[in-house]
Image (cartoon, rainbow, N blue to C red; front, side):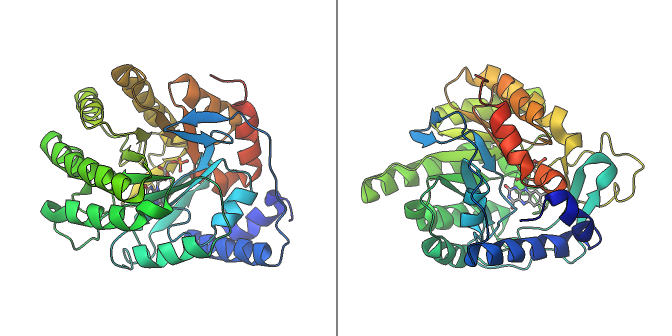
Length: 339
Ligand SMILES: Cc1cc2nc3c(=O)[nH]c(=O)nc-3n(C[C@H](O)[C@H](O)[C@H](O)COP(=O)(O)O)c2cc1C
């Protein structure tokens, strides 16, 4: 495989979403003809949520929404792979263009809106993958399901993905599905988590296998909201929390080309905000459940800082677009000696 620094100029000459599609197709092709080298960097094994992770560095949701390249991410060295967000029915997402680079800041803004082929197609891809690693499946709601009925969509997806997943992530924090983040409110969250927990326990009985449930939250929460969420997670015995999704804030990118585009900002500018949420959650959770730290990891040092702030595992998305697969081994090496 050519070094990413040689490939990147060609990709960055295309619009961001086209480059994304071509990269996925190219990696899939290389893998299918056996030309994708397996770059396993030895990492620190992490035991959490009843799962043994070969290293603490995972692929964040959204890069492989349909689970089309699961084997590729494994070969590139990730300790775990999260696919999705998937929804009960396929949906096209928002009109294009809907993904923008802010290269001076190693950032992206996206308003994709859960474009995906639906949960059944995702499960077919999972069944066809030769993958024995740790697979998170991230679930959401269709854009046209009323927010009052959101729980129905999450329950449909949970039921379907349960036997195929190592853990299931409940995404209530995308800024690109109208009203979705309302589900982080106290009574909405209480009701949603109560229903999902009951279904998880029933499914654990049915399949004689307990699959952890993880909640993914936004970085745009105040201290009181973080404490409420932490209380709800403990009360409902949720197994883990992912902090964070993209931000609707524009701190650090004001005045730059594309900064005014609607959508969620990711990459370097979200690092401080997302890490602050990890730190506050960690204090509020008192180690009762693990935190997966994501947001703005663009080098190994920042991966280690997420662990220092209280995360047990980390995930990356935007950093991969800017740094390529080298970032994975750099993060694995940097987190080898952390807590
Ligand atoms: C283009 C794009 C699409 C995304 N899609 C999803 C998604 O479908 N579900 C989800 O939970 N997070 C999604 N995310 C959020 C990422 O998983 C991650 O939480 C966020 O980008 C912060 O991490 P980063 O700075 O390493 O990118 C998406 C992010 C980007 C940039």
